[in-house]
Image (cartoon, rainbow, N blue to C red; front, side, top):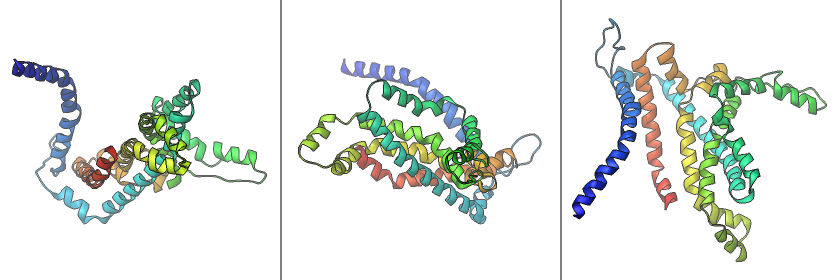
Length: 287
């Protein structure tokens, strides 16, 4: 009887999970399989083009130092944006979770998730209006300061970082907020009653308990930022050449899909290696 019940439970679970598995198969695994196939071709298999299997696309990465340089540049950009987002996002999440209550919290939450409600291109061009010469930031600085100020951050690494932080900051705020909400306030009050200082409470109690949320937000930011291409291209101009922009060029401008697919999977492999190297830290944070 128990075996029959267990079998029914497995059938029920499979029935409930089958739409999700079907979606993953259609939307994730099939496109990735096609990209893997393209990465081993000499040319796209469209029309009358002649193609054959080859490893030259992957060899191109190791033979051309520019790709490795741009990959390292993108990794540094991802680390910078992730670090800035965590430094800004965690205090915001703490204020939302432990300090502000009632409708004020709802209003601040609305401001946090507001970037999700706008198109990414709208956000980028809005920053372009703010950061360019004679833009909003330049006008505001000249209206406040008594001397003439010329602020033009457009087409610079600073503009790229600002645009990426604005786009991905909500991720770390939301994940950190959920982790902080799970911390019982009585633990913090008990630490205070025992004479613990604020710095001790933060470093020995709050940060270790909130570490899973912080790390989850950092991963959610780092992975897409490393391969980003829209913000670097529009806010960085000629200085916005990164690994992601090169991959986009292979698909859009050069129409060299095999090389673009190979570069994409090299990026995926590097990111997986980095996450694998930090997996002990992630497991320790969960425990």
